[in-house]
Image (cartoon, rainbow, N blue to C red; front, side, top):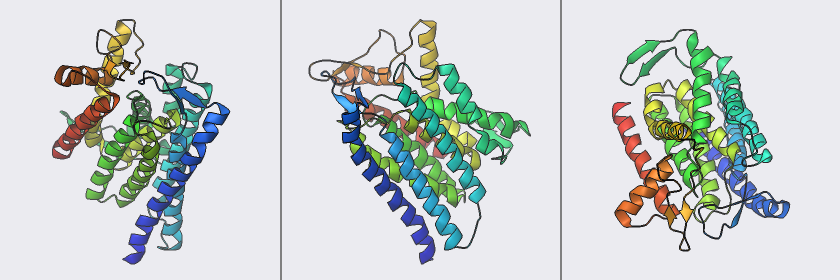
Length: 335
């Protein structure tokens, strides 16, 4: 019993402290070497260290590796390790893709179609182990058997969708990290309730790394996540949903991201390639950047301005967090 508790706790501690240490060390290096970006939701546009989320992913990788080692050497078992290594490989590949995008820079990174194609290909670690169950319970439809199409088509579409979608709802201090905790926390808890304890442990490892990141990313942010973080966390969410056979639950959880996609497409029809940022005034109160709403963030700004007569960056983030909590409760009831 004590061994199991130790194996559950030690990877969490390692993931937190590796992430915390590396991010803290990275911030002054980033400023010195010029890896900084402007905080667009602040009136004076302060420069903030970029790519900090990469080190939360590195912390997660170290935590997962320790978990694997403890299972093998302490518990003397290799149960579920094929699936764990597939998650680890997927996380590494999608993070490399995100880092490549980060290094190329905002506005000059990979083109949207390139991102979509590459994230489709990067689902290979799950495809080759035939991850998941071909019988999928879908909202409003019920159970559907996709057969061989599930690992060969549905899995890569899911990873492509979650990694790219998680990258779309971003750009505010603490937003990506908070959404990551809510999404990963929900699928982790559902995995525990359905007996997939290894997925619950991996979810906790991820969450502890994100908590370390949020210490530096919460308002006012000292570090930005970067695409290496958003692609990585998005792909992890997709992997846990697939391996835990939580498709219906995961689809409900991802409601805000489906809405974000619809609003993004609306913008394209209006010849607007939207940005999520608001327009800050001298008091750092935000206004909508467009006449129409093209993002959940724009909607949150409008809601706060209607109710409270102003919208700050923190208010926008809290509003989106509240919406996600409501959706999460709904997912646990109906998912």
